[in-house]
Amino acid sequence: MSAPQGKDAATVAGAWDRLSLNTATTKRWSLADAIQGAARAGIPAVGVWRDRVAEAGVATAASMINDAGLRVSSLCRGGFLTAADKGSISAAVHDNCAAIEEAAALGTRNLIMVVGGLPDGERNLGDVRARVSDRLGELVPVAVEHGIRLVLEALHPMYCADRAVLSTLAQALDVASPFPAHAVGVVIDTFHQWWDPALEQQIRRAANEDRIAAYQIADWLVPMAHDPLLSRTIMGDGVVDFACITRWMTEAGYQGDIEVEIFNADVWATDCNLILEKIKRRYAQLICPALA
Amino acid sequence: MSAPQGKDAATVAGAWDRLSLNTATTKRWSLADAIQGAARAGIPAVGVWRDRVAEAGVATAASMINDAGLRVSSLCRGGFLTAADKGSISAAVHDNCAAIEEAAALGTRNLIMVVGGLPDGERNLGDVRARVSDRLGELVPVAVEHGIRLVLEALHPMYCADRAVLSTLAQALDVASPFPAHAVGVVIDTFHQWWDPALEQQIRRAANEDRIAAYQIADWLVPMAHDPLLSRTIMGDGVVDFACITRWMTEAGYQGDIEVEIFNADVWATDCNLILEKIKRRYAQLICPALA
Image (cartoon, rainbow over all chains, first blue to last red; front, side, top):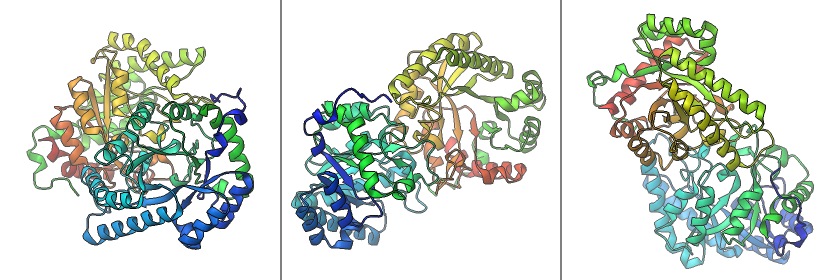
């Protein structure tokens, strides 16, 4: 492990105020379970998925989170903006407007955006990427009106065909650049971006451009899971250098939430309380020392 | 399909002189089978793997290829340069020197380099990437002495952990930059690089820096194969825009070989002669029009 081990995580001021549990990590838990579990574990924030929020209802979800003394680090997710036909475009805009309203109701500024892959039969990446920018242009005024920031997520290039034609942090910043920084930000996600030779430089750029809205962490499993969507694992169980990337984030001045978002069949098969304990140990060991 | 369909491939001068069969595509064939198969199909060149060459012996392999009237577009592959310990470093350098000699004996200038992934237990990508540059520095004089070009292959980022810490064309060009262009080049590979938002710009840069040594083609399968190594498929069976990328290559002035390299269980289970016929049809349809 290249992570520094010498410092006492407890001594890094504010480190434990920044940990957030993304509800995808505890897939077997309902939203209520996840809120209670996070509160019991002393985790002060949750990143929530729209389907979990919908199960409870937005107003109820917001009350439950507030009553438990937690806050919402982000809402996952808007996006899927790559369609070419009028009906699908209109449906996508409508759905993203609803997501913006939900984010506002939940009290988070951050709506994570997974922009979508190549529509069936399309191969011209340039055209598809241009449509993402067009749709963002339509959504930005709505986001601004609600005080929400659209947070562009560059997904790992292996998802370019079927999930997100936004593939690098540099590209996300280029796409964000025509819009105000308070309206369009970016998320740094270790699983998606750890391999990028330009990552350090682009984190600095993102900070200079005031675009860093979120930091999501998960490790890269080796060998990969057969389902590439389930290859995210708990920090320390893969090959990502969390000390290094977290240090870049700290040096860039990021002081926001650090959201643990895992998709992994083995993690999902394990008792969620045990998972939270493991996450806290690894956070203390691998992340906290780099926050000083 | 965004590929132009209107032109007659047969009218693009020289197009059929540039097609090359990589022997990985016809995995069930011995080197002798692949040479005879390519010659029968009117494919003028082969890209050969070292294990197939070793089965025949280098001198015999060179004679067989020459006697069939074919030439060698590239030797696959050198590399795996990321080890940290003295013994492994020495073994890697020794093995790459042998590969350089084999390439020279086979009459190709191009030794494709897959640089290697993270050694077990290592997480510091910067350190590992620096070692690749160090090893290249040791191999360049040997390559120059034998008239061989070390051809850096940026592999898809999903292989960064276990196969190649070289992940983008821009990075490959940065790594190549301290060395003469006749000694260190790059390969553009559609499967590995199609997603890259900087691809067009970096192909232009590679041409300006005189680094383009090879063009390998394979399509990106959707959904991905369970084994990510076997997700390369025949042009037209995936989502890659071959017309677009090949046009960028043509506009950059590339006039070299176009090597078809497929790793795919279904392709390997099919009669190799049928595969060659399909490759020729797809080459005529998707590649040739963009060579004009």
